Amino acid sequence: MTSKNEFYLYLIFSLLIAIFWSIGIFSTWSTDYSVYYGASMFISDDYKLYENDFTNKGPVYYFFINIIGNIFGWGGKKIVLPILVTVFLYLMSGYFLFKSFVPNKKFIFILFMSLVSTLSYQNYNAAISYFQFSNFFFSLTFLILSFKRKNIFYLFLAIVFFNLAYLTRFDAVVFAPLFIISIYYFNKNSYKV
Image (spheres, rainbow, N blue to C red):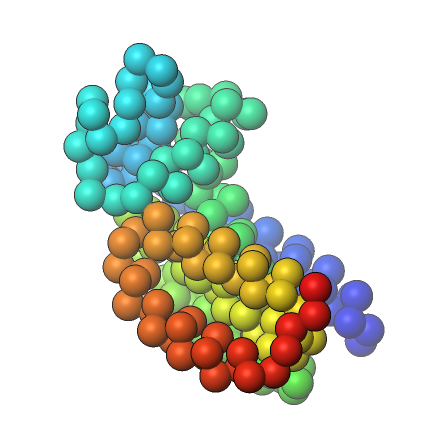
């Protein structure tokens, strides 16, 4: 199987899993997700996050839901779209991360299936965690690519996605030492622009 066909297979598989997992929201509504969705729906110049609605989560997931809602609309059956996109990004970011450092296709499949298994027995309150980890996985992928290709643009993207993960939930700061140590360690080699 060629690399392109493998990518499309994982893309379709991730989309199908995201669809089947996310449509369950119509039968089991989650309170945290309803807060994310409701606050995102009302974000405007008149309604400001943290001023009119207290939350201890970062603003990125709220704005992500807001963007999807402004594009596709709000309420009804459209409530599933932010979760669907979140789970799809989570699975695809995991695939890209595994692809960046695992040469064996069978092992990539095993890691991907273990990532899929993290969706089991979770309710939709976990959507923000999946969004955070998708940003973190993209960040690690670009960090690995920056070391392999010695390209500073990938390092910049790694920092951007790490900041998105941090601004989704602040507990991502736990992974900051990983970035600082690895950037310092690999900084001995020069990057090209």
